[in-house]
Length: 228
Image (cartoon, rainbow, N blue to C red; front, side, top):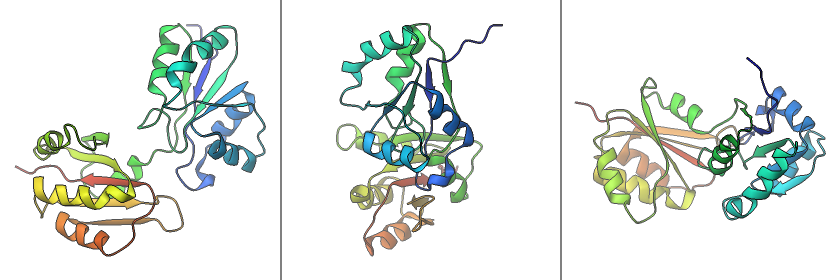
């Protein structure tokens, strides 16, 4: 079976520690024609650190529909591109799904490299079952949030959600309300960075812990599944 050269490489980048990028990711970034970046400043810093000089083009949630057509046309003409998000694997709660889908629909080849993503270390460090889990990404802020929380409260699999620092306390309060104060919860923040922290315990205890400090950094919340 013939293997076609990819027109698009999906390249995971470190979630904090720059040393976590793979050797293969660096090789790919050196050979592509253009790098699509969620934030050119963030990706530019990474590329400069590894002495990689390539044209950077902004590709994010606010322009992905507008730029899609021209990007596909360029790939069809032979241009090879790499897609980066600010941190982790593109498409996982970051821009990427739309581009990947349309590139495939256009009959072009894609290669997605394995690499960093925040929820995997948070899941493993929680000590909760890893054989079956559900990833919810960022929960909606308002519309449908309570409905989703009530449904997830009955979920038997381990649950993983992303949250921003200024909304963590609200989420933990809601977990106490809908899941119960004794449901085990694990909160990881600043993963792979100098001030990395994982705190695990009953929901009420976790809430009290984070109420007593200023919360910074990207956050992954892992919730033990409902026990029968």
